[in-house]
Image (cartoon, rainbow, N blue to C red; front, side, top):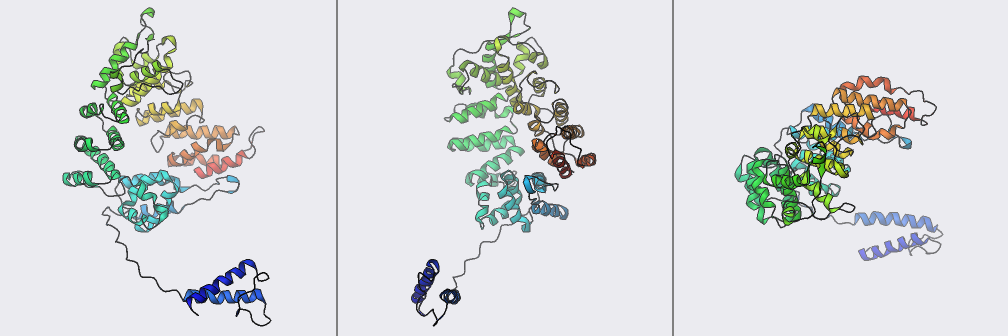
Length: 520
């Protein structure tokens, strides 16, 4: 049979099968005398399928790929390798009805595991790279750490599977080994020839070791960089920001890109001793001061009436967002960019706690306190952050500073780990868990004993009240990752299914029991 004849016969068989043998008789030569048309069609199709497969010519062999690059990082200890295999293999399917059941989802521990492995400089086991890339594909939050851990071999492997194409896009240079930052020639070569993501990673690495060297690296090519790249490079100066960066940032205030100018101004305002901070303080001091009519026992505010070119050069944005007045918008930016020491001198040598407790005239209190919050975060000032947070037991809407939990979380980040955990523990004891999720997110892991106990106690109170456990699923998920393992023994009593109060949510007791079993 020629190939043309065979192809034509196959097409006829397919047509007969689609239309049915009662509407389209099978091709001549297929039917035996007195045979059954459908059976004859199937027999012929089976025969020609074998012929078609046997007639295929082998394709030329493809060139073998280049070998995977070397990864000279030390291998994982066997115990750590075993744990990684467990974490990657765990795929707890949800129980019926959307219930999570009692089995924990061990993949929730992957971010901590990867962070620890990367801190210690281990390389990923080759056999686990496919599972690692699959996990990173499913969870975008894992990708940065997973790609660093996978290293150059992980990027090499990702080329062969379209499902892993995110690796090529998401490798922020971390997937490619960087040169030793103490080798100037290698650093300079990658800086001048590398991809943008590699250059960002390199600048970050050099900045951590040698802030001045990183600044010199950036200054050398600054004028030739694209605006969007300048913005990203400038953002990397946040870590290790110091007075030595001021001359470079002052020059960036004249950049042709508005976003670059705004970022440079923000960074300079984080340096209380900078010339920009001084200029902003002079402007802000004209707007905010002691109320003479009340003997200095209150704060008087007069927002700026005009916007000038000097303000714009120093990063003040002229146009307010929708719903904000121009004058209050300008005032907030001036105060947020001023050194907080300005107000100690301006308001009679009072402490930050005394200052935020002063009444503010004409309804400007909320605007002024919000700007001080931004300044305290920007300048990482623990004393002002503490004053603006107020007592954790006080109602958020009645305290100083801001009632915004997102802003409070930023203020907490300026405090030491122990003080931060103690403040959140007291907040939970006073207000419960419903508003604590963002605050818990800035606490060091594992949670300290008092903080962990306050979370468990609040969950127990919610359980006793018959509340729906899924209302606390976010906090429960955090607890699964962040609670100190030594607290597990305290949870055993909570795994029993409680008697449900009459006004409890139906079935809540069973859900709570499962949630605590999973947590244990």
